[in-house]
Image 1 (cartoon, helix red, strand yellow):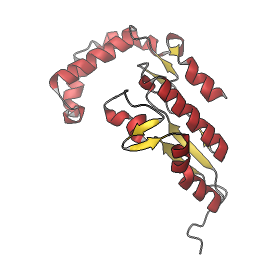
Image 2 (tube, one colour):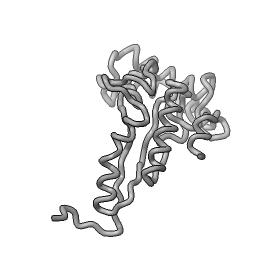
Image 3 (tube, helix red, strand yellow):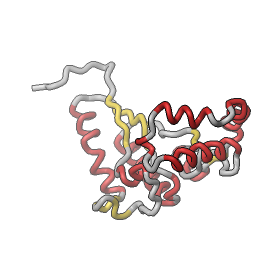
Image 4 (cartoon, helix red, strand yellow):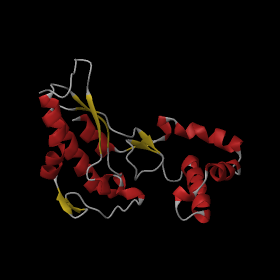
Length: 186
């Protein structure tokens, strides 16, 4: 018995951040985790990644549906480990015939997932650091902050300065992660 009545207008779409402790660092940006290696009590390498993708491939084949990975990436603060993870992940997507798109085109910090990133000494990055420091000074956990308090903190920064700084959001002001670009272009 077929559980799904599907047509040629359906695609299976997933986000892929496996293992989550490595890819998202549990919001703590602990870049000491290594890939391949033990992460979250399990050894993760290309073989383990492939095993974790089997369910996507299973449903794709069972229902004759294409797979689209709408997001994937790993914090680049992990350096070579993150690049190895991206390389293994992309090669597996290609092996399975999945369609994919990388998660972050531009990011404000070089250790995030962005293909492009701002220099650490750019005015925009320094402004973001100032906002972050003000928030962290008052709150140990960002989830404790209320919307009104965050707006108050942001309002203490001169809005005219923020508008002037938006020129730094243009791609030509960004640096590029060349190693990541090479992996994604293969």
